[in-house]
Image (cartoon, rainbow, N blue to C red; front, side, top):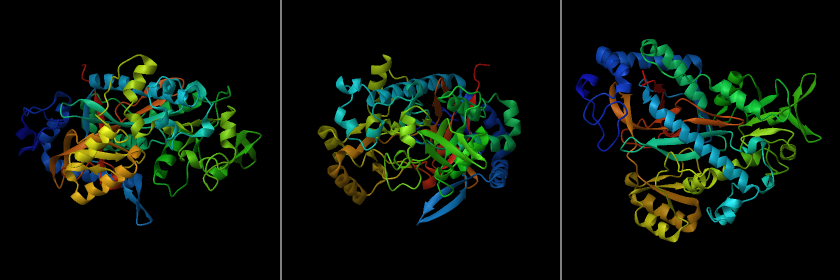
Length: 485
């Protein structure tokens, strides 16, 4: 099947990029054959109609995200592109194994940091890099959560390079978000493309709520058949509140704010109409330093006084554990291959993107001399904020970044500007290639679990590499398709 046939007029492949549906010789990748046949049969008009149906379904379901703008909270309909992303199951099996390997090693690393600190003593990771990090929380020293696992829920961002190889762009270990949109995307796409789901063997994603509940239940400090699990949210004005309420509903756990909980004799309780109920596990969606005003920020109005002491005594489990963000630092990210080798005695199954550390004088000088070619990121920001994309930046922006690096080199890393993979995306009634990434979700408690696929985020602006929804990005449903039949 040719590209011309595929789009009834030609599909403009992006130079030096791996396209996920169309190979460089113009043939359709086998895993994408069903969607290609659909387009070839029905054309762009039908795709536009399906996109309208999709948008209406999202509106009817109330799937939204909150955008902060000029001090206001603006609810927007979730942006989902009608074109799915397809990945062969054989490739995903090895990718999933690599993601589990990575989280296992990172949890061993965090547990070591707050206890023996062997990796620091052996000089594999510089001690100052960790102990001076704002994400290293001293009140967590000497604590080891259940199973020695700190980051129970991880969202690892993957990108493909120009050869189609998955690379890890960053790890999200504090309060990773987006899994609700992965689930809702699939629900919507099943309604819009029932014939494609009937024609292809697409791996399901709807077991995630059950897997999340099982993982959280495994953390319970008490041996009871049905532990009391709550999801702690900052409240309705948080940008991820849709996800908080969605996950609580899907898993059948209580959605609570801090005023619903209290600590008595180092036990956490949930206020009930007729008394109180002991809480076993807290799935927190509140940042570390706000969860207990006695342990961290005394000005926090989101926390529960005494929570950290109750957790330290093993009377309640918190997922993700406070302090897990120490491995979320983008500078620590550069050491993850060595961390995997140190704790597991294995080479990393998924490589990092090449990374330059500005705290190293030689690497800093290289970065400063090549700001027009590199992507520069602050070590502890999220949402795509504070990033300089060199080839698309102005001289003034480069000069501003240079001053910031010189003032605080520890806070910046740099990476080559990758030719991120592309996938056909419906833009103004035509299919055009757009860059995208992928955030799978990995769970670790008593057992390990990885989603079949994840949340694919796509840059909707032509040539843009920024995929974050808060900055104009969209999403795609990720289809892991059985290619072994």
